[in-house]
Amino acid sequence: MKRNKYLSICSAALLFSAALITGCEIGIEDPDGNNTNGASTSNTAGPTTGDIGGTSDTGGTSDTGGTSDTGGTDSPPEPTTPAPTEGNYSLSLSNKTINLTEGSTASVTVQIQRNGEYTGEVNVGVEVPSVSDQAQLAWSFSSLRIASNETSTTMNLALDYAVLPIQEQTRTLRIVATDGSTQRTTPLNINVTPTDKPDVYLLIGQSNMVGSSEENAKEVGVAGEDAPVDAIQQLNVTGNDQENFRTEASFTNVDAIAAPSPRFTPAVDPLHNGFDIGFNGKRGTTVGPGLSFGKRAILNTKAPRIYLVPAAWEDTGFCRRERTTLEMFEGSLGWNAEPTTAPELSGTLLHDRAIARTNLTLRETNGILRGILWHQGEADSSSEFCAQVYAENLTKMVASLRSEIIADARGQIARGVNANIPFVVGTMSQGEPYNEPQGPKLVVDGVHRNIQLYVPFSSFVNNDDLKPPAFRCGSDGDCIHFGASAYRQMGSRYYDELVKAAIGQ
Image (cartoon, rainbow, N blue to C red; front, side, top):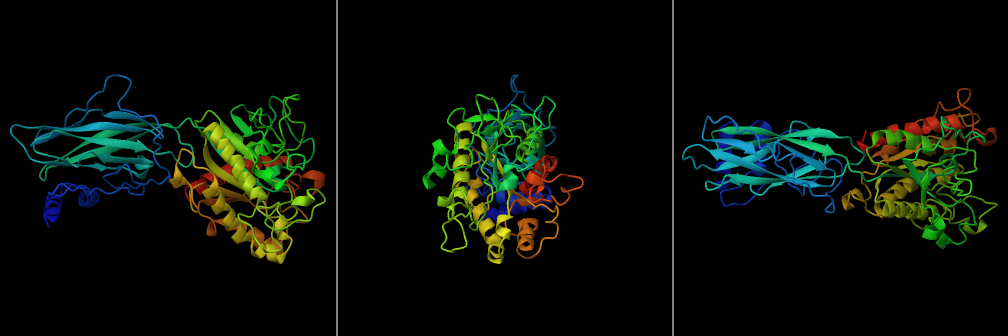
């Protein structure tokens, strides 16, 4: 009942907006001294009181290893000008502008100057002008009530890592104070700096993610479309062959899944081939969608580098494939998230290798996993059974990748079955004679186009137009594979859909 007295004062005085009255209900200390402030959530467009333990729309958590920022600017702190002095008190901040880098914290002192002999208690809160001002941001106060014998309280802020890279920006919060009869507000400006941790992207699937363009399509001259960019790096993976993968244990062995030196190289097509030190590049002349994706992604990040993790394998799926090579892995070379007794299904080796390669990259680069790209489906369009279980198998694989890949700077809240690690699939080729999918292929194609029904934070790339006559087909002229120019378009589209997936569109 005592707490209701404070709420009725807050409401009756009509000092706060409707949203701030709500904040008053969850954010004002009751007379017994109990702090009732709730967690800040980024979907709150109106005024709130925040808590550093609160959640944000990015799914991230504060990195305790981040650099602490005490606020302010490079020059000596410039306090805010107190609000007009009509009434019992005025309001100011120790710093009207603070700096926050993703993963860091800062604090500011909220101060009141009492007029005359006024000794009333003052309650404080926060108004949020927009959802974008609050994204990734959480805060708490040392006390939500400035007692009669006090003149200040401390506001602590933390900025979590976003799902996707952000740009430099300035946010604004409005600090609000009320004593039940007089309301004061003053702005707090927050200069936000993106993290410099590199972005990491996982590339998985079968031959169209590996890249099966026509031969001699790679353009690596100075102005060539496939010329490497130093800021776009890749894990220097070993090739998809039995020389590198002699046993099932090889698929998770660090020395087998990637070259020890150099561990990372400029991203060069074919991405899934190892880097030839003597040649200072790769001798293969085919391309895939990965590098063009990287060239689009690098334009939208402040990270000094991005890292691609190639982990696709030709002619693979969730179902068994008949092989003339790697016969010893015929029943286990697959993308399933867990072992299965179904005779039609394959194993987990490629799923396991994708996790191992991503973990290796995250550990050695201190990067942040920003997304997973998938192009596959042809292998599972070969039978009615494989097509009917495709959605279930794909959903399990994504859930496992999101759960089993090691946590990065975003923390454990960014891992789990439904974690916001954007997942993007690409539709299969519509070039003749594959332009009228029927039966099993139509089922698999439907899963791709409706991926959001099965996997949260996902989207699909529509590749229907990437076919003759506008675009050439891939290796040997077989339109089951895309040509080089089509792959370049596809890679850029993957980035567009990744952004949509991250915000749940």
